[in-house]
Image (cartoon, rainbow, N blue to C red; front, side):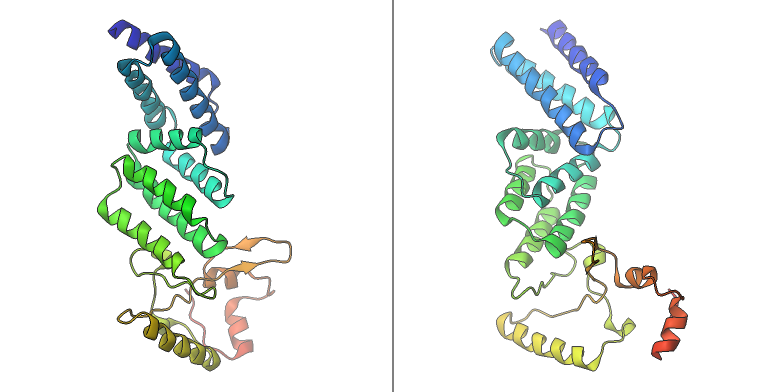
Length: 263
């Protein structure tokens, strides 16, 4: 049995080396891994009647590929899952199995979750999400017994904030979202009086609905869509910095008669 397991491992790794190309896209690499996993799952079912020890050998071999054969494989899976959820692709049984395999066998799960949270925040803020699919993927992570209580709480709070969104107003729970989404001091920003009035009105209505929750604003979060359909997800200062004014920001500040602090 040991000899058969070793032979199977060598066969799987050799076939992966032959078919793998580092220039492939995330989607192509994940598809290659999935096809390899499915091929040898069928082989073990037919040749070994689904023997548990041989299935473990297969999963151990896939773990070697995920953790050692592909550099930063967790980034590829993060991009793969993000594309599926962003494009609202149906999560088939095969997709579920490959996500389960990665979640249970990756040695970089914490890095992956940080990347997943970042992409989840972008999906919620800039694209909207299919809540059922998002929650289904999170359940896959939980079933792998890798998600810490803190990570689980943060992701659940982000999804809960989306559920509670009213009239396109998204209220973010502090410290649950990635750093660039966390509230910052309004003292650094010049808020027009007309906007301040609207903000105060919203705060009053929000306190009536959510007693005890404190509002902190995120003026740094800006969505800008150009005429050709390009959506920029840069922060406010970065967007201003790259706009084609034909002069620098200090000159613009002088023309608008507003104070300017170089960052």
